[in-house]
Image 1: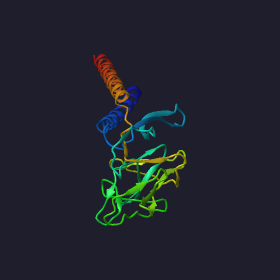
Image 2: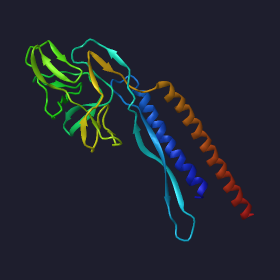
Image 3: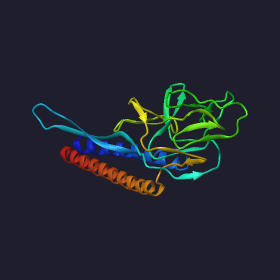
Image 4: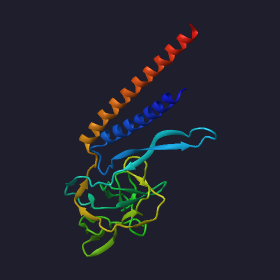
Length: 237
């Protein structure tokens, strides 16, 4: 295959991945705590001995948006939203994960858990237990959880070091290999939930742009095929 075909196919492959990402964002525009993702296009250059270097474009790196989602007041005691930076820590079978989805409740064992049943952790990585029958749970802006005058713990709001990668797992969960530290400006709003930060209008606009770009690439491939076909037919004659 000639360089024109390689370049175009690499571009088409990247555009397909971006379309999949956009579709995933659009499908989660109403998901609590969802973070919009985008793709970073990069170029790989390989040196060739005695000739010109080879380059290939790719779109494999996903970037997660940290923009604040819309905060909605619910009035529910354990609906918690983070205003500012940071993430809640939850305990999953695969280890500690980060999330912005704060629709919590109390399990049958008395632990504060996420909607998926994962235990919510404090800054020290321990679960927070609510005494049986306790209805007057209060959560302060710094995450301190209390029932009446009794202190139950402090929900941790943490963030990875600047520039660290957040790897999306199922739904609204993220993992990172970077060290975690307490958030510097995040605060908790009790009785609120943070919605998805997907900008539906910009995503729809980008979807149209990607579709048109893909169609143009397909036309270029068709034209290159016809050119090669015509050249071969001429040589055969």
